[in-house]
Length: 125
Image 1 (cartoon, rainbow, N blue to C red):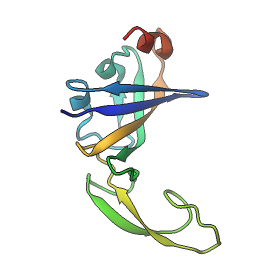
Image 2: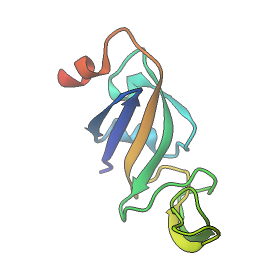
Image 3: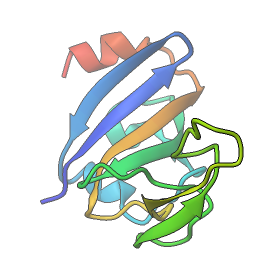
Image 4: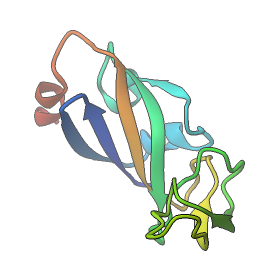
């Protein structure tokens, strides 16, 4: 059984929601940057964009790494590593941009608002 924690960001506030099967099955195979309909998670009229996530070991999903595999990259200051000194680089572990069974958290942003506020939709469930 696949279960994801969704963190939905709507400008100044964020909401967290856990989804299991069959809703979670709709996320399998999606990539960072793809848009999904709100009907998938019970928020009709909304459109969300996947912006990132985390796998079961806590490693972030990286948008420029294809697939769902885990790999180690040599990175400088930027995504996944904040260099304390200028020019410093380190090897860090990342997961690819595709959502799989190993993904635990999915980050979403609201692209198109629906008729009801999200807090009201998720409070009822």
